Length: 218
Image (cartoon, rainbow, N blue to C red; front, side, top):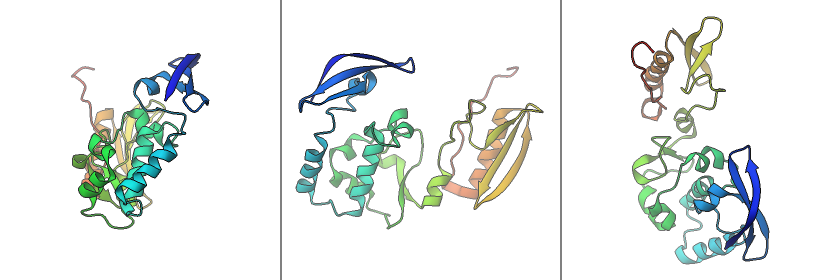
């Protein structure tokens, strides 16, 4: 429903933005990568019609998994969602089967669901699909979260650089209790120590660092 009219410059020197005209007559600016990827198709005017159509067609709008699916799709495919940067913005997508219908999602994920549980991705670097999703408590979901940005000092969860020694520290927290795991010469060794502790404390819900081993001498 969008027609590209002209370039509007770049965002932070990276993404080119374009002024678009929607079929409804509204003008809106979007990044080029979002347009090319098909993540935006209208100014938003088509969304109410789509939601109404879904409610009429499947009769599952009151099902507890309906809102779970809707939120999941929003954070992965709607650039205006407040969580988009942590999901869709880094390439996390909902599989075609679950995008196609809420019936498919309910059929695949009804088993094991209980009120209060949250959908959790086993591998945080992969998308939402049957083989990569399970139900977890909020606390278990927190255990499996990927590390937040640490200003480029480390890419591993539970690892930090001690400036005065140049060594890498490792720590982990559970139930509000801070557990110090020691100092290490190599960043990867600190990440490995975190992984071991996380596995012992959180079991299958632990987020484990994907450790990149350097060649000898590096």
